Image (cartoon, rainbow, N blue to C red; front, side, top):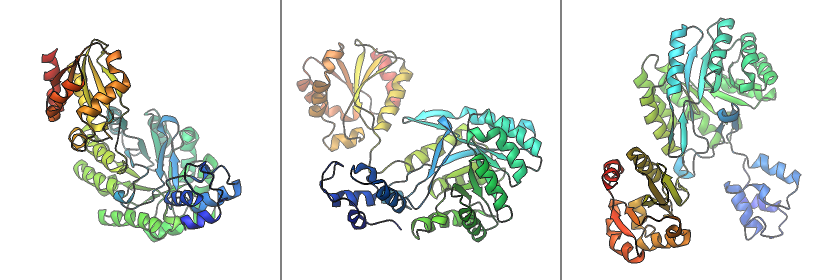
Length: 446
């Protein structure tokens, strides 16, 4: 059970030194209880107290890491059931499936499609993070397929309930820190030993949630809490119920044996139906698949799913922002035309992308608008002639850029006259209302 702010305050040194940034120890204790600050921020707390508080204030869902290097991913660590209550912590990741029981051409096609999905959206890299390698009874083929999957440079899930075959595959894949998925009621002891030997995350499966829960408790008794849970049932309804139940029991009932990330295998629920898999992937992005496994993924599917994921896995209390400054586009120098926009990340990446497509050198000047969109920040008074001219003065824009043509967004054309008064010597031009019109606008302007 998590400690309250009062309980944390009672074991603090009560010096009110303010070195943590809070006015009192009581205020600090409250922030720690809310998860807004870490206990390490207090310089006067001893190691014993830190250890006690770390255990007591840990999220009800355990944080699990898989993969290594650029392919390391964090799962779990969630504290709320609904994003609007606070925020979701670790975004779900996607996997595509290769199977040792299929021919090479089918598996190669899956991996080829995977490689095509790799792009940036609003400053984040979007790609298929994981390859799900399915064992089909032949250990040698399983090992060979694992070696092939490793070349895709992604994190791996080795789906295998045979401890000996798992050992052979892990012998070649252990450095990539894969998930070994296959522990069940019958083989829990052996699979736990294999997972510990190779120091990898162990995935738990079972016929139903009661059986899975008992297996989790057994594995925890064996000292293994580095787990993920396959909540895939026989039907879509059962799978949805399993996945929600696992998260709800962890967060609402504080049952830490349910507090592990989940794997949902859509290939088992909608084999051969890419449209239904896409629909289900969107459902489990919302409710609560930590790893969503599909048979394959096309670029068109990724665009929709990753856009949804990015909308869900952002902090609703923190606007997505870019740092204010001058962003040269298409090799722009001090003589290139200027354009101004807000620091809302989506606005910046959309308009900068269209500007790049125009091929015209442009200095895009991003001003501090509180992380809001153009119209929202204008309505709130955060994107005004006064705020723009103030930023130009503070940032020394006039000293850094010789060109005195400045394009403003068409939706705030009303600022033109006032800006001409406040930015003496600048020629204020009204740009298009929509980003998609920017290519034609700047080409004609150039």
